[in-house]
Length: 611
Image: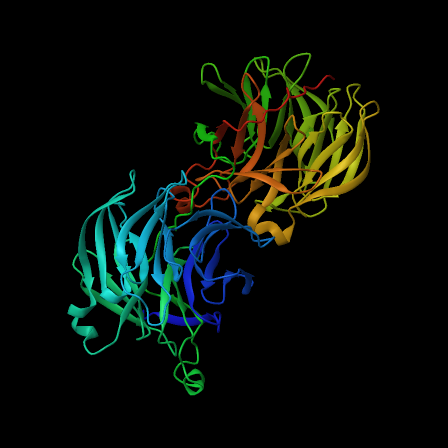
């Protein structure tokens, strides 16, 4: 079957379209318009192409695991917050003033590689360099004497790095040490000057990607084709011709199966007649299908935000097979309770012995909280039940929403021991419930049931301020953290308002707001489902204060404080809805429980049910 080329974003770039990166987590294409200073984000489902404008030239864009996008801006590597358009400088390369950053990519360890080029006219030769920026913030010069730093790629075993300095008309190969981030043994992998098919052409190799068979796909600037080479022999395997755009610049693999090749192009030095005829698609983004090849998930930058002094570790690998949720630290036993919702498993992990025991309740076990008189309270479908851990004897405390397919979701107790828990409609897929079917309830210590909010979509995180005068609450759709005035004596709520907005316009950054906890400073810690992060917010200003990324787990669900000093953050995540391919790549730790230490913050003992 022959390949097909389609124009997916016509005239996308006004100057130099470059740096395509397929964001596996959001299934969107990122790319830049270098001289225009625009960073683009294109959604293939809606065909919406958004952009953020920055002051300067932008060479590349790559997602950052702890939030935001890493962008090469002039001579600096910056972190871009998409919603606000603000940038934070991560590093600046020491270069002559008329150089700029060009192409950049991350290796499998999350280390950033990016090079520079001169922008003078005429261009000064050999004054650029290739750098690496480690996850510890250390910047290292790796290759010097470069003229136009361009394409980067790594072999499947991560033992070889490929690199292009465009004027050499060659692709270089290096022995690569992934752990140390070092290069050795430079050699020529592909030589365009010795490839007969390019005789008599002015071809200039530009950006580059690699497929799962370790074949290189090189953008051939000036002849409008992508060329596939065997990286081991340098042999040309095929050429893919792009229509009416001779100056193609780079490519990446994308799509649900990573078998679609996205190609960028530039608009430069064309006459009006050319732009109306032979170069009528200059600056467009193309998609090539039917190539019989596919790529691997593009690596993201794994540097941490904040001081970078905290540590993320996996304490229970693949703990859950559906939706890990509802973490609750039992201070008395130094144990972590949590649930695997769809499986109906209630877990208890002993931090002293490392033993993770569980009892199966049947679907859906949605929350677990110790009970003062013994046992635990579990959200089981539409019921709240009391369970004796040793005998598994069960007592129904209350049943709600009868006659519906609803179920309880998240739940917590206030400082007086009342249990607050909300319901949600039946999900057809993760984060896709029947809308406005849920209700936020409280079960008082005397057994009285009270309604606090209705027409809820996905009832989620709960937390109380230190003085118990404010109840914070999450409805994942529309994506807000709400606050209620709270009367601790009566358990009544009033004056609902939004304090943090993570709505649809910010879904690329925050995903679906999920479970939540609070620290002793009154700041909220929100698990962001689908984007693999926990974010600390100031509820007084609504501003983000800190983001923690969880590589290998995009479906973060909830968090709680634990440990002997309550200064360890425990984080759950889901596996339900993760494809086999995702589980082998970007979601290889789906369903695990994580512990974050060294944050410099702590919580208070979790409340138990006193009814």
